[in-house]
Image (cartoon, rainbow over all chains, first blue to last red; front, top):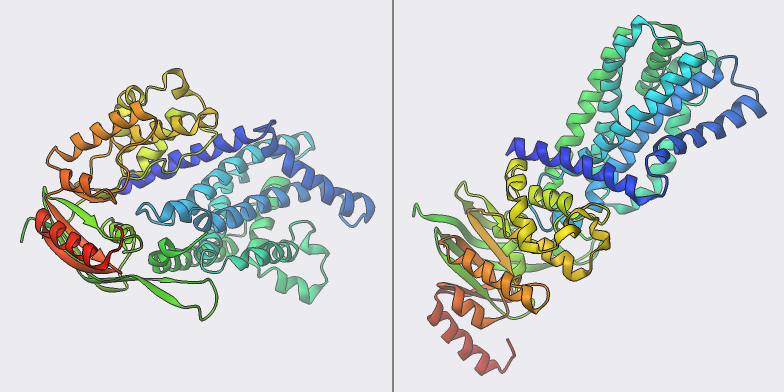
Length: 253
Length: 235
């Protein structure tokens, strides 16, 4: 049974990516072009017009937005997945977590494409590979767990309360600005900065930037705390989805 | 008792009538009891809105009862659903694999059945093309060809007995009747009394979400017809 579900999730992920590629004329190119356009907007506003970015602003922004885009996609796409698949849930008995997982895995594969391109850009801009790269998988696991946990919680509630979709985007925009995605927390004045640095997403952003830009090993204590929090969020999300699962087949999209 | 695969005891299923705070609930099933034994072909009859499809989804394990009890032996139970998970931009082959996985088959089992699926649907080279290019009849051919491959311990059928054009209807109907005749345990919901009479040994009659009578086919039909004659309502 478990192996069957793994096969289902993996093939559905492949199918999702393949279908997405086929839905537009430029296909795969959009996976990279869309985030590149978004990065261009922030670079124009903060780097060129306001000039608040500082000397390393472009790489800092590229790293921040690449990681954030991955998290956000997992939370929104995964978060809406049970709701959009309600017609299927009404016809077949499957664990509802299958649907958010498929979206999250598809977004993770897309992230790896974008991340590979990011690495090439960083190397060309004078930020060469370094030993601290070995810590990247750990940071990525923590990022995925935070996103998956939040995505599961959203996924569990949206089928019961679809109105939540109108709020989610705004909440995520606020979270993005509070997490130092498009600006460095170092530019924030002191008492507020320490408070903002308690945000687990900000810790993950800083860890990724430290590794890629300065060859610094992550702050292990901070990373461990974030990992514990993210595992807890993941477990809460899984629990809520499992508890609410019997209600989903009775709901309309 | 050991050959009883699934047993429903006074099962009730409630739905929310509207999506709003304090909305009313309605009971699609109020009080249904039935037991299904191994190798039995059970037909479910009743008027529109009697709760037949809801009952099938309870037996399939999709809906959990809001009251009453469901006891089931460790058996696989699958609703014959057509085009489950079909995605327009994927090829017929990929959709067949995806749908097969959703219907409970392992990947290697679907792969092994692909030649049979391809032969049965008679789509030729279209099998490798995205199904967005198919006509609706072609989609149903593919959908049925996949669905007929599943072999659960208990097969649940909701009206789907034949699909497509006249020729394929004949072919799909024959394939399904053969499947039902192979000693499988089957629950069939249909408006077509003749089909139930021809294919089922036992019949459950439900009305307004309540089981009225369960028993041998002829006995239940006799009572059902007598009731319809008295009430003058169409089936």
